[in-house]
Image (cartoon, rainbow, N blue to C red; front, side, top):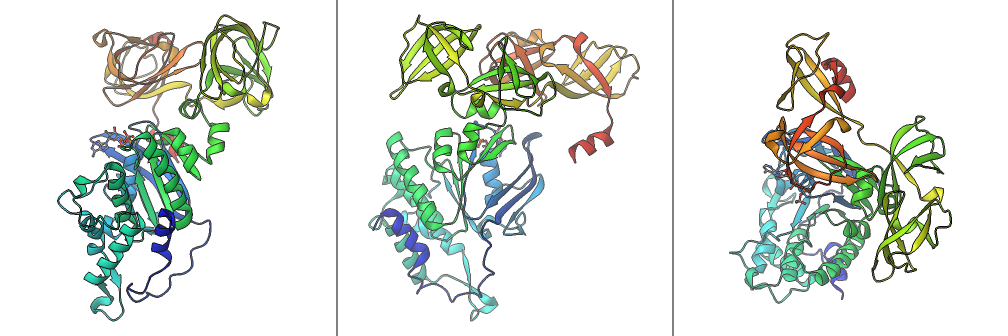
Length: 507
Ligand code: ATP
C-alpha cells in the first residue's frame, strides 16, 4: 500500500475503535466556503501586518498563501489556527465565528516548517499528544462527551504512524530522525485528529531539494485522496503554482490577487504579481486609446480596452512571449544581444533595444553581439492598472508654510489652511529623492522593494514612522538599504482632510 493510500485509509476505514457515531451533521454543500475571513486586521506593536483582509476558502481546495518574506502569510495561518487573535475582523469556519474558540477545539491542525515536535517525547507520544486533549461526543458518557481511551489512542497512533511509513519508529527519540522523517511525524500528528482543514506553514522549507520535490508530490496526492481543505504557506512561486487549486498572492498584508495558478501566471493583476511570479519584462506605458498601447517610444496594438485615454499603466511581457529573429529587420524593437545563458531547455538572452534590456527566452541561441529583431503579438502584451500613482499621507499644518507628515516637517505653501488643520499630502513619485546618507534626508527609511519599469526603478521604502513611500528613480537600490527621504515640496499638493469622506472611501 502506498504512502497516500495508507493516509487515505486513515479517514475511510477501520472505524471500529472510534467513539459511537455522533448524530450526522447536515451534508456540506459542494463548492461552499469552509472558511470565511472577513475584514481581518492584525497589528503587532503598532505595525499593521494584515490590513482589512477578506477571503473565502472553498471546502476541499488546496489553497496556497504566497508572498515575499514578511508579507503576513504565517500570521494569517496562525489566526486561522488560533495561535493569534485578530485586532479587527472575524474568521468563520463552517459558518461559526472562531475567535473565542481555543486552538485545540478548532477543526484544523497545523504542520509547521520546523516540525515543532516535542523533543522530550518519543515519536508515539508526539503523535498521541493532540488525541489526549481531544474530546469525542458519546451520548452514554456524562456530559455527552468523553476522552479517548488508552486503547483507542494506541490504535489511532499506530495506524497514523503506519500510514506515514514510520510504524516501527514509535519508540524512537524524535531527535534521532532525519528531517524528512520528522516532517512525516508532524504530518501524522496533524492528521491523526482528522481535521477538516490542514494548515501547512512552509512544511517543506527545511528539507533538501530532492526531498522537497518528493514531498510536494506526496502532499498533492495526499490532498487529492483525503479530500480535506489544505491551506499551504510558501514564498516559493514554483511550489505554489504546481501544487495549488487556488493561489492567494499577498504583499504588505494585503491580497494582490486570488486566482487559479495559470491565471495568476498568464494574467497577473498588477506589476507586483507579475514580478513575483516568474520572469517578466515590466515597463511603464500609456494607454493611448482602446487597443493601442505606447511604451518605449512605440505604439503597438494590444487586446485591452476600458482604460482612460492616455492613462499611465504597467505593461508586462513574459520573456517566452517575445519572438526573436536574426538581423535588425524592422521588428517592433530592433536591438543587440548582450548576454546568452542556456537554461536546460531554452536560452535566456538579454537584448538591448530602445534603451531597455529585454529578457527574452527562445529555443534558438543568439550569441552576444548579434543584431536581432523582437516582435510582440497583441495577446502577449499584458496591461494592468498602476497600483498607485501618487503617495498619499495624512499630515497637519504646524505653521505658516510648514506641514508635518511621516515624522518630518516640510516647507510647503499653506495658503488657505490654518495652523492645526489636518491635511492629506499628495507627493508624486518623482518628487521624492532618496539619499545614501539618511541624516541628509528629512525622514529615515529602509528600502523594501525595487521594480525596474523599463526606463526607471520604482522603489518602495518603509519609513521609521511605519509608512510606505514610492519613488521613481534612475538609481538602483538594494533591499534593506537605509536611506534618507528628501521631497521636492514644489510638487506637493495639500487637501483638507475630511474624516467622513475617508470613512466612506473605506466602505
Ligand atoms: P516569512 O515567509 O518570512 O515567514 P511571512 O509572510 O510568513 O514571512 P509573518 O511571519 O506573518 O510573515 O510576519 C509578518 C510581519 O509581522 C513581520 O514583519 C513579522 O516580523 C511581524 N510579526 C509576526 N509575528 C509577530 C509577533 N508575534 N510580534 C511582533 N511582530 C510580529
